[in-house]
Length: 287
Image 1 (cartoon, rainbow, N blue to C red):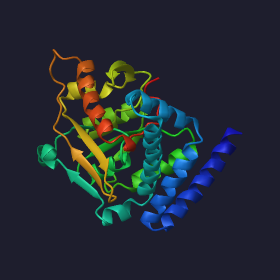
Image 2: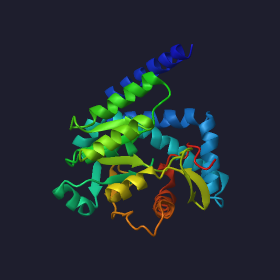
Image 3: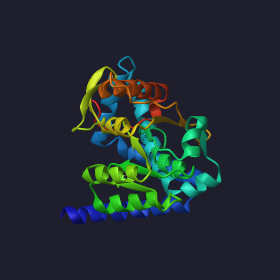
Image 4: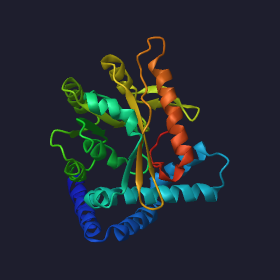
C-alpha cells in the first residue's frame, strides 16, 4: 500500500515539475512559491517552523514570526523551481560567486577542502557551482523517504553537474564509505551542517545544546583539510550569492571538536539572524 501511495505522490510531483519547466522562469517561481506557502501552512511542518522561529526570536510578534515562516515556504518553492531550471539561471547569470580569493590556492594547487553551508537561500546551487569551478567534489544529501521522488531529485542534481566524476551520496553508511574513498582520491566535500543529527554530539546552537554532526571535523583533523564556510543568500532581483569565507582549521590538539563546532554555529547564527526568511525553519532542529 505504501508503495502505491509513494508512486501516486511521485506522479503528482512529476506532473507539477513538468508544468514548472515549460513556464518562463519568473512565472514558475511565482507559482511554486505560492503553492508551497499555501500548502505548507496546512502541514505539521508549519507548526515546527513557527516554534523554531519563536525560539530564535522570542521578542518577535506573532505577525512577524508568521511573515518569516511564510517567506521561508516561498523560498523552498523557489529553490525547487530553480533546480528544475538551473540551465536558464546560469545563462541569465543569476549566480554570483564572491570570496574566491579564499579558495584561490585550493584551485591552483588542486588541494582538497570541506565546504560547509546551511539550508538557506538556494542550497541546491552549492555543488553545481563548485563543480563549475573545476574542483573534484562530492556532495552529501538527506534522502527522501519516497524512493521514487528520491531517485527523481537525485537525477535532477546529477544533471546539474558538468563533471561526470563529481557525485552526490546519501547521508548514512553509504556516504561514509563513498566519502572516505573520494578523499583518498583527491575529492573535496560539500555538506550542510545546520540540521539535527540524532547520532551526533550535543553542541550549543542559539544557546541550546542540540544534537549536531561533527564527523566532518574529525575528517578535517585527520586529513588536515581546511573547512570553508559558504554564505548563501538570495537578493530581491533574483540573484543568488555564494560567498566563500575564510578557511577554518581544526588542527589544534588543545581545542576540541565541540569548541570548533560552536565557533561554526556562531557563524551560522549570524547568517540566520541577518536573513531569517531564507532559512529552512521546517526542520525539527531544537527538539
